[in-house]
Amino acid sequence: MTATISLADVRAAQARIAGRVLRSPCPRSIPLSELVGADVFCKLDLLQRTGSFKERGACNALLLLDATQRARGVVAASAGNHGLGLAYHGQLLGIPVTVVMPRFAPLVKVATCRRLGARVILEGDTFDDARRVALEVAARDGLKRIHGFDDAHVIAGQGTMGLEILEDVPDADALVVPTGGAGLLAGVALVAKSLRPGIQIIAVETAAAPSFGASLAAGRPIQVPIRPTLADGLAVGRVGDLSFALAAPLVDRVVTVDEAEISLAVLRLLELEKTVVEGAAASALAAVLGGHCPELAGRKVVLLLCGGNIDLTILDRVIDTGLVADGRRWRFAAQISDRPGGIARLTAAIAAAGASVREIVHDRAFSGADVFSTVVEVTVETAGHDHVAALAAALAADGFVVRPMAAGG
Image (tube, rainbow, N blue to C red; front, side, top):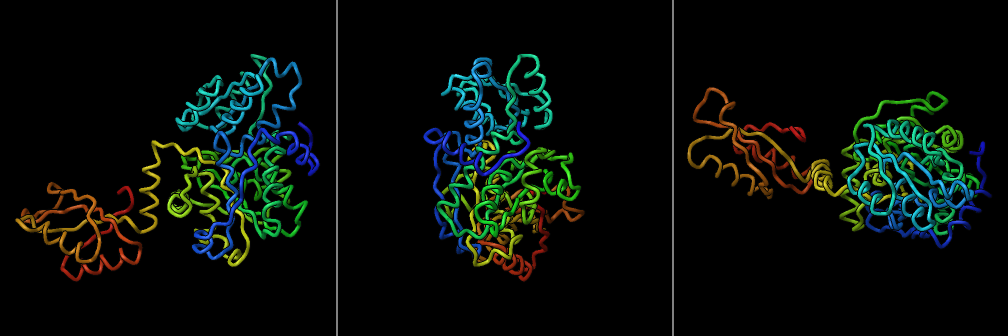
């Protein structure tokens, strides 16, 4: 690993990976622009063969191996996408690839890595656990370790996305970059600030793993605790040393988004862009959609939609969470008469308010001393937060005592 990288390194990487990695489009999004009040462009690196930007850095690093390293093979720790990039390009180049993934890695990423010919080791509960095992495997088997975000060749490869963005949107005012280990952030920020010093770089991290923001505050990379998150690609407890050194002086702002904001962003992209993104990629839209960047109103903004490998086994839960955050699904408890017609009266009031009943659950055992009444938990589909408020008011006017219930409660 070299001490740093330059714009020339990124340009060399662009020439090296040309024809091997897709030059992804960066179209304007009319619906997202109308939604957030900015001129929004989406860099669609989720269209890469393996569904993420990680192919750029993986391909560049593999092409720079010497003959001995190519013959022995490589090993990497990955939450999924870096491993997929290495597996795919390793297979094309005839280089053996071993990927160590944490046990929480999405099943689709594990299965695809194996299908692409990689040896996959599932170990540990966090990315940092997987990283330690990868180090052990590298030492034991004599394999070249390719770090997913703290390798100069990988960072240079990721930076090629920045070159493409500024070719397509040369007058962009801001780039919104999902940030975990900060490899993508470092490469893209290096390119953007070199070519357009006045451009704004906004790093977005998940509240479940706020390692870049914490490291900025400390002035050096530090370890932070991480929690399970929909944005598994950002679930890194410590940013890379090189990636932090490159990115820290170039980032204008750091935005932290929560799980509900990420879920809502996934939902918005599904509905408005007909695009399936993983949580890490959706964090870029979440930052703008959640009102964290008011200074971007009316400006030209590029969202880096850098991955589409969401686990289909949780997609329905993500959509449900997004609907709740959007006020389009509401749950409440109401006490009603347990005599014939009690539920009919409640559902009629809901229908009159224009909502649709999704589920009703009785709770007779814990409804209190009045044996002629019962508590029901009702989930309804609504049109938004204003509709929820109107429904609550209508139920209260009809004499129902309504208690809103928290999501999942």
